[in-house]
Amino acid sequence: MPVTVKDIIKDLDLEVIARGDKVNKITESDINRPGLQFSGFYNYYANKRVQIVGKAEWSFLDAMQPELRKKRLEKYFEFYNPCTIITRNLKPHKEFLESAISNKRWILRTDNISTRFINKLMNYLDDKLAPETRLHGVLVDVYGIGILITGESGIGKSETALELIKRGHRLVADDAVDIKRIDGILHGTSPYITSGMIEVRGMGIIDIPALYGLSSVLKTKKISLVICLEQWKEDENYDRLGIDKEYMNILSVPVRKIKIPIRPGRNLAVIIEAAAANYRYSLISSISPVDVISGRIQEMEKRRSCK
Image (cartoon, rainbow, N blue to C red; front, side, top):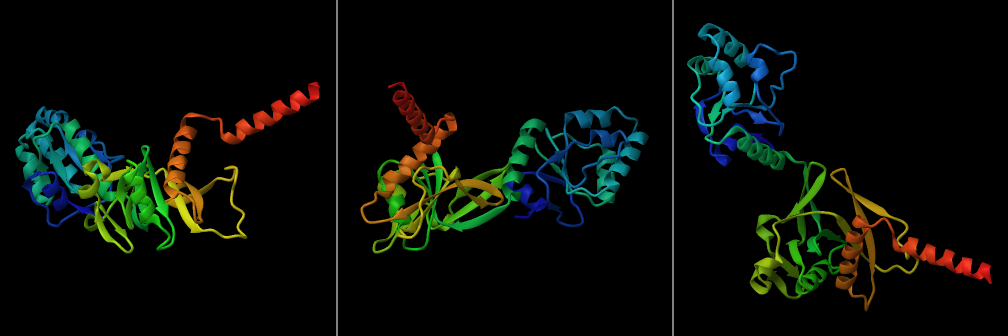
């Protein structure tokens, strides 16, 4: 999602000191502090990033003679940048404003200290600029594990999620799941219009917070596991030992995927709870059930050989 200077002015409550000749787009979530540029170094200058002028940069400019300050700032504003933001409500030097206005550059200001504002700005840009997609499915939080339940329409995803909520787990999104990749981690959320709602065929739309309380829903959740529900196929060779691991690529991030065949009498909510608990266990233990069985077989063989 593109972000413009006007977006950050509105969303981060910034004061406009000087206006640029156009509404610049911000394409990078990292920032630059132009202290080196104020000293005249331009061998490397990340000018496509938002520029932050804090107390250190301001003091450096303040220590210069007016003639040198004017020269350095004229050079600085010759280069394009999306905008320059001054922190701590510092008053820009006369030469700073003159050079910015003559080159038609955006100058903004905040009363936040530099470190706090940089953290806020980078989190904001990470979220807005993150690669995103929308998938058909249901996202639930089971034992603290974000599980994306997928499968063809009408297979029972929403009904399974409803049973999980009844058992004390939490809903994030039903039917459509908006997913963003931030720092290699997938975060899922619900579109605003369907937030907190589940559609069950034959019943219609159910307001989950109204029926089960506010604690039954989550706004966003990291996606750790994908469970794909599919109709049971007699000729399909399903994994019975958990040896063959499958993955689903979402926004170039591989996510562990488990196929669960649907058959009358199978309690899907209990199976998904077990899958979540097993996944949590795998994060803290390198010993799998297959390893345990293999160890028992070896132990039995040793006992036989001793007889």
